[in-house]
Structures are given as C-alpha cells and as structure tokens.
Amino acid sequence: MDDNKNRSYHRPIWDDNGRFHYEVIPQKKEKNHVAVCLKPPEKVIPVIFIPGVMGSNLKNEDGEVWQFSAPSLKKWPLANAQKRKQLFDPQTTTIDDSGEIFNDEADGKKFPSRRARGWGCAFYKSYGEALDRLQYFLSDDEILMDNYFRETQLQTARQRLTGVRIGDEPVEQVLTEEETAHGHRFLYPLHVFGYNWLQSNADSAMLLGAYISKVLGDYHGRLAVNKVILVTHSMGGLVARHYSENMNGQENILGMVHGVMPDLGSPAAYRRMKIGEHSIITGMIIGNSAEKLMPVLAQSPGPLQLLPGRAYGPGWLKIEGSSQRISLPVADPYAEIYLNKTAWWRLCEQDLLLDNTADEWNKYETRISQIVQIFIEELNGKYHPQTWLFYGASADNPSDSFLTWKEQIIPPRVKEAQRVRKDAGDPLELSPLRTHTLISAGTPGDGTVPVTAIRTSASRIRGVLATDVDHEEAYAIDPVDRTRAVFRDTSDALVFTVRSVVKIVQQVPAP
Image (cartoon, rainbow, N blue to C red):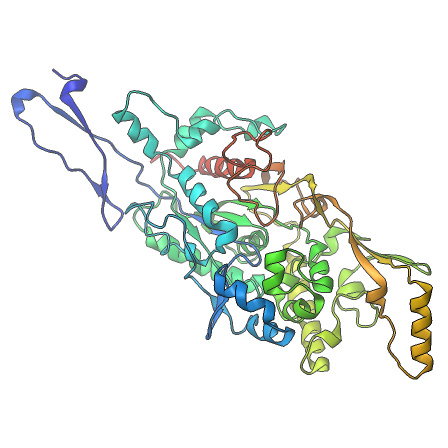
C-alpha cells in the first residue's frame, strides 16, 4: 500500500544552530505508512554585498550622521560647511548598523538574523528591498519542497532564468538546466559589509578581509568551500578588487559580481567637488554646493579615489572661452588637475577648505599623492579570475564622459558695473567660476558612471551585461522599462546578478 495516500512528506525544522531535524508522528506498522523526510541543501556558500559610496550608514560619538531617516532629512539642510566637515570626518565616524531592515525575520532559523548579517548597515533607500529580493532569489529552493504539497508544480525563481538570454548577450552567459540544478545544491546566506566610505578604500579593504574571515568562521562545519562570493555596488567593487588583487585575498573569494563599478574612475567625482551633489535628497544631506561639499570630500580619500585615473585617458575636462580652448589632462590628471594650485579650474579650492588653509592644503596634497593616486594606479587592470559585471549604457541616463567649462556671455551692463566698482576702489569682480558653467557631456551611462569608465573586456572578466539602470538604484527590484525587461517584475541587472552567482558556483563540487 505504498501509494501517495499512504505517504506523508515532512519539511526540515531548523534550530538555532543552523541544523535541521524532522518531527514525524509514529504510525502502526501494519499501515505500511511511508514518511518522506525532504532533505534541504545543507552546505553553505556565503554571499557578501558591498555597498557603494554613501551606501553605508555612519555615526559618530554623538549618534547618527548618515542614514536615511526623518532626523537626517530634517537637520542637514541647516548645517553649514564647518558643521558638515566636522560631522563627515573619516577619523571620527564609524559604521552604524541600526538602520531599517526589510523583512528581518524572513529567513527563519536557517541563517542568523538579517541584522546579525549586517543588513542594518546598508542605506535603506538604496538597498532595503533589493537585498530582500536578492536573498529571495538565492533561497528559492523552498519552492521545490512546496511542490510536494500541491498538485500544480511551480518553478523556482532560478529555474525561470534557465535558458533566458538578456538582449544580445553571448549565449554562454545563459544558464543551462544542469547549472541551475547544481546551484540548488547549496545555501546562500546574504551578508552586508558596511564600511566607512569616507576613509581610504584600502583601509576598507583591510576590514573586508577581517569580515570575510568572521563570516567563514560563523559557518564553520557548514561550508561547501572555504570561500565567499562578493556582490558589489559602485565603489564597493574597488574595495573588493583591492582586497582580492592587492592584499592576497583572492584565495578567500570564489567570484565577484560588480554592478555599475567606476572601473577607470568617473568625471562625476570632479563635478561633485566643483558644484556639489546634484541629487536632491543626497545633496540636501551631504552638500549641494562646492562651499558645503568640497571641505568634506577634500578630507575623504574614499570619494577622491573615484576620480579618473591615467587609464581613463586624456581630454575629459574641457575649458572653452573666447580666449582659450583647453582639453585636460594631456597626460597626468594628478599634476594637471588634482594637485594644481593656481588654475581656476583646479579640483580643489584652498579658500574653501576652512581652518588653517595652508595646512589644510598640505594635508590634501599628501592625501592625493600618497593615498588616492597610489590606490587608483595600483588597482588598474586587476580583476578576480571569476569576474562578472553589469553597467548602465542608456542614453536615457545622461552621464559625464567628459565635462566642459563653458564661458558665459556677460551682459555689457554687468561689465560696466564691474568697471565702476573697480574704479571706486572696490576689488570685487566676478570670479572665473561665476563666468563659466560646468556642462555635462550627457553621454550614455547610468547617470553617474559613463560607458567610457567601464572596462568590459579582459581575460578575467567572464560575463558582461550592458543595460538600462540608474546608478544609485542599480539593484532596484523593478525594471526601468517593463516592456523590454526579461521579467516584468525583476530588473535585468538583478537577473544578471543572480545568474552570475549560479555560474560562479559551478566551480564547487556537488556535496
């Protein structure tokens, strides 16, 4: 009588230690009852998400400094430049892990809580729901168990990706049934590595190494392989690559998936220094003008390490006026722009650094030459052997492949007013910055990182997706254009990320 009516299915019950057992009610022997204990994946491959610049919550000894919350949005518009510089000090700020978490208890006891896995470090506006969706995709094996309890069999989220091609990408990037099935043999707890994005990315990379060691230790005895998978956003990719390639961390990493990483740097970093952050909410908090933001960025190696390096190429900064037309850099962006102390279009304005300006300039100069330049140039061209990346390539997200200082036409009456004031002994004249407007090239990208900042071909880059994403919302759940997305309820970028994780896992033997 071993038929379905005489058969019962039992789910695993997880305990606080990440182990599972079954609760089976004994039946009389003559009934020939068959109890089927459904075996879940046991072996763990941790996935660690690394946010981008401004993507981790920060605090100082007085409390919250950078977090998407009502108190932050209320207090920042009133803060002057000196106050912002004091609060956004890389030497006095630390990670704040108290942020909001989406569906905190959704994973049950299979993994430690989401807060214990660092989700509270992530800037909720950018990552809250995206982290939940990513963990859902990586935990969809629950559907396979649910199929034993219903007549209609459903596909898992990852099975839905099998055989699906995004746009005109190479066919080898498409998942096969065998790859999907192999991916379902493992568990993927999603962690978040929050870091102080004001400090040097080299310092953050050192802390990443310690965090990876801790995560691997937390799953001791449960690991499928003594390695993690890293999923990064923007500047987080630079942190991950530096740890992997310049700090001998490669042996601890199974593979990396990078989203909108400014591989070669981005002229947008120059734009922020000169005119502030243009995003309304972010600019309101961190600074929407050079007077408010330059003192913060000049003391912060992390954001400065997003500047274009030598590999970006020449001529991305153009000065156009009635008497001059210049394209810079000719060869060296550090000497020609970042450390230039006299030209009005230089990166840093000494008068805006506050405090002892001579001393502040010396500190800034040392920061550029000994921290920023070394980090950028030493990282150039280095990738983990299992690197997958997506980037924004849409004309609908105009980006700064180059920037142009365009001279404004000053009305004759204004020129005459200047002359009169000068003749009267008043030294005030319109500064060069007030007679020039900084204009974006408006070229394809993600709104921040242009296509020209992405290296898409290298021997270690295994898969690439050019898609339509906004930089800050690169891991957003909903597709930008539902009519063109592979799945109407999930962005192509997120599909690519999950699929890349499955591809990376093919290296690990079946348990």
